[in-house]
Image 1: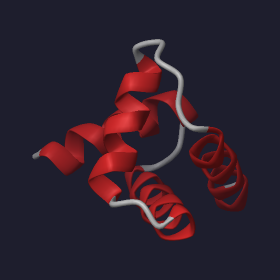
Image 2 (image 1 turned 90 degrees about the vertical axis):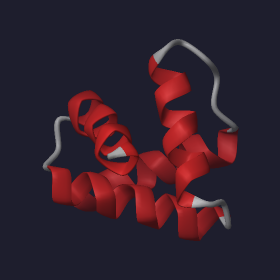
Image 3 (image 1 turned 60 degrees about the vertical axis):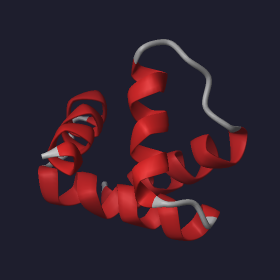
Length: 68
């Protein structure tokens, strides 16, 4: 359930499919050597106006660009 909720936030923010949302989470996790659950938590915090680390933001943008 937690993965679904975290992925849903990304899906809504980026307007991508749930499958692409999970792919993006996985790629950012792998490219930043950060647990997927931590990436998902950072995305939720970012949606609530908190800053995310620059490396995570850069990888998130790169992963989203690959889905389009």
